[in-house]
Length: 507
Image 1: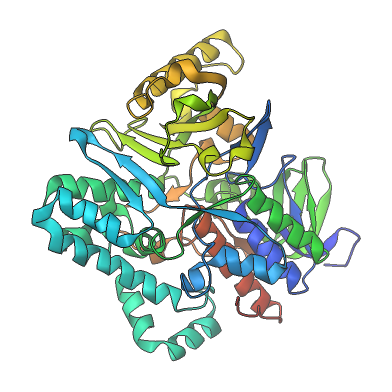
Image 2: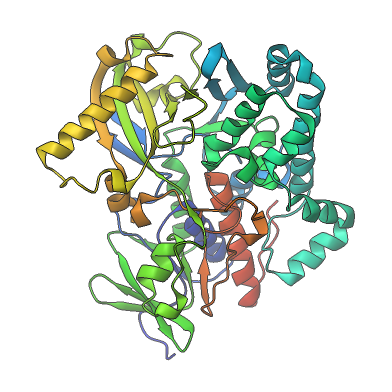
C-alpha cells in the first residue's frame, strides 16, 4: 500500500471504551492513531447526555478499576491508564456496589466492607455460613491471582512466557480456574436454593446470565474487587471516562473524528487495509481495530461472506428499555443507596423485563441535576423484536413506551414510594433507540458464552482477517466497563509488539 494523505498507523472503528483504551495506549507509545465515531460524542454505552439541566448516564454507572495501587493490584486499570496518559478523572467512592431486593423480604446490600456483606448473608442463612465463606474465598483467590499479574494479551506468546515465568504456580492455577463456572463452584459449598438464587442474581446483575453460565474468572473480578478497589463513581458522570481517554489520545497527537460513520472495512486478499466512511472517503492503516460487535464487524462492515459469523455461534444478550428520570429530591430518603436491583419473582428474573436495575448517581454527585432534584435511571432487559411492529415517532409507539414505563415505575415504587408523582422529566429509550444511537446489532448487550463454554472460548483480539483486530464486549473477557478496558489494553499490547514497540507495563 502506497502512503497517502489518508494513511495512518492505526484506525479504530467506534469510540467505545475498549477502542478508546487501545487507541490511547498506542498513541502514547508513538503510533499515529485515528478514531472514527458515528455520533457527536464518545463512549458508546459508557457516555452521558444532558437535558434540561440534568446529566444522565447512557448505560454504565457501576465502575471498578479506580482503586489505588496496593488495594486492587493490576485490576485498577483506570487508575493506571490515566496515570500513564497524564490525565485526571476524579471519583467518589460508593460504599455499596448494589442493594439487592428479592422475593420473600430478602434484601441485602453488597457492601465495600467484605465482613459486613458476608455477615449479612450468614445472618439470613446461618446454616450456610461455612459454605458462604468458602465460596467467596474462591472468588478472592481468583482475584488475588489476576491482580498479581500484569495486564496483557492471551495471544501474545512473549507476554504469556513472561507472566508464566514470574508466577508459574499462579498461572497454572488461573488456567485451571478458567474452565470453571461461578454457579457450579457455588454448588460445591452451598445447597440452599434461595441463596443459590441470590448468587444467580449476583451474576445476572452484570453478565445477564445465571451463575452456572458465568465463568468463575469473571466473577472473581467483579465480585471480589468491590471489596478491594471498590466501586467509584466519576465526578461529572460516566461520560468523563471516555472524555479523559480522548484527551489522552489528543495529548499525544492522535485524533478522534466525530460524525464519521464507518460503513465498510477495506479487505484485500484477506488483509485489512483501512475503512470506508459514509461519505465515500477511504482511509488506510497498518492495522484496523473494530470496537463494533462481532455481528456488526463481520456481517455488516466486512463484505466478504466467508467471514460471516453464524447466529448460533454465541448467545445474543438482550437489549434494554431505559427510563431517564428527573425527580423531586424529596422522594429519595436519607441513607438511600445509589444502585439497586429488584427481583419480583425468581421464576421470571432472567426473562425480558423480569429484573429492574436502578441507579440514582446524584446521591454521590449532586452536580448532575439542578438544585433540589435527583436523577433516577431505571432499566430492564428488552429486545428489538418486541418493538419491531411500531413505526418510530408514531402514536402507537409513543403509547407503548408510556405504558411500559408506567409499569416499571409502579414496580420500582416497592423501594421508592411516591416515585410516580415525583417525576418532573422523563426520557424513554427502547431497544430501537439503542440500535440507532449505539450502532449495535439489534441494540444487543453483545455476545454471551453458551452454557458449558469456558471463558477462553470468548473471541480474542485477533481475527481471521490479517491486521484486523477487535476490542470491546465481543472479545475476552466480556461485558462491563472494566472488562472492555482490559480488552483494550490487551489489544494495544498485542499490536504494539507486532509493530515493533511493545507497551511498557502499566504502573
